[in-house]
Image 1 (spheres, rainbow, N blue to C red):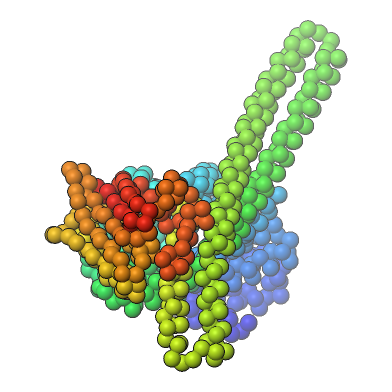
Image 2 (spheres, rainbow, N blue to C red):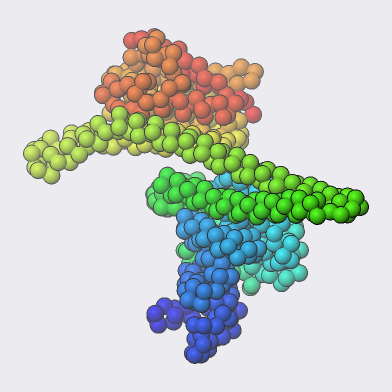
Length: 632
């Protein structure tokens, strides 16, 4: 414990030293554990350390929770869970953050703690934001904004404006984004809140970056970096913002330099999300300068970190916690409705009693008038409560549909994996067992390893296709259309695919005269061409040929991939682009396995780029796939 505290003291910034000194002094007092002021002090410390050392902030928040539970101090427990939820969010542990928010809502409902309810909505909005569910995030941020405004909590109101600015920026509504960010800046300056000011300047720069106003974006990021009051979390974001802006300007070496600075601060703060952002920029920038070794290294880090933050299990757990949170809200609503019903019953009894004992017409009329007005008012309240319950029910049904869709996608994935990935992995394991047991002579190991290499390549392609398909099923395909040189892109793919073609003694030709330009998403084009060329190699026998060439019309630039392979049967032609899995998959001419989703992926990406796809095939006489991309 002493070692931990010493570490916290060493990392403390000058702004925090007064609070830290107060806490150390308070701990020496006899009434430390029973004083509610100790809980408040620890939560203040947690908030101070949040953006520079989130792990230290989490330590103080948990200490505050322990004291509040010992004191049976309900409001202190709520504030502690609020701090814990924010700390876990900064650390990238969204499941723990959601769990803390659920406990915060439960305690706040019991004691009718408005500040805690608003804080819970804010944390839920942040978690939806981390999942790219911006519509849901806007709903919860709006709820928190209304409550913090009523409570006249300017600091939290400013953060709610900031969070809404992020959501509208990410959904492409830049005008609304600037409106909410300007509101946040006004409050930050009024409150002298340097953390909120740095956050808002960073996000304003990000909005200008999305609008491709790169020079203006750099100005905002530089303003954050140059401020001596900026915390480490915002330095991290500003450096990654500068890096992505330089990448957009084509200054890749500057992008690398600033992305490394961002990665340093993100690791210091232990923010997993910001670390992903920095590593992604490094991977793309190194690839742009053709340093593929570093690009691949950072790509592997990116995949590992992505997998650690989000996977299906965590996603389902977070969805379950969302549902649990909403159930807690429903319990409160049912309690309110029951109280209103009791009030109505009491009013009705009072109405009957007064009618019975009425002694004159005037008193009787007055009683009727008063009780009628009360009944109408209560009925309006009850109707509003019923409407709220109906909205909650609709939201729960919507989430149930989303979970059912996720489960359907999962079942399809398992079906494909069990059908197409089991055999390659079994062959790989058998090969490894033979090598380990020494049953393969040294002179044959070269050929075995070569075959082993092909198996791994095939499995990698299938897994990549599976992941792309699964992602498109869950979140849809987003296109970033731009003018690009398709012949240059195809050349890069052919240079990689030539190795596989040569291993099958296949002649792979890329025929073109001059550069060809299209208006499409670069990553989508790569996936489309890689899958078409990969399929052509897979279904073309040894000694065959594959030709890539171009034609065009007034609207489209057309790329053709033609092979001399086995062709496609009429039965499977009718299923192309419609079904996945074993119904459509087939083994290649060298028994190469497939996942059965490659052509569906191609169709999805072609549609997302406003293109067309045409197929001509003769069983035993080869196939030709023609992809139409719009000209710029």
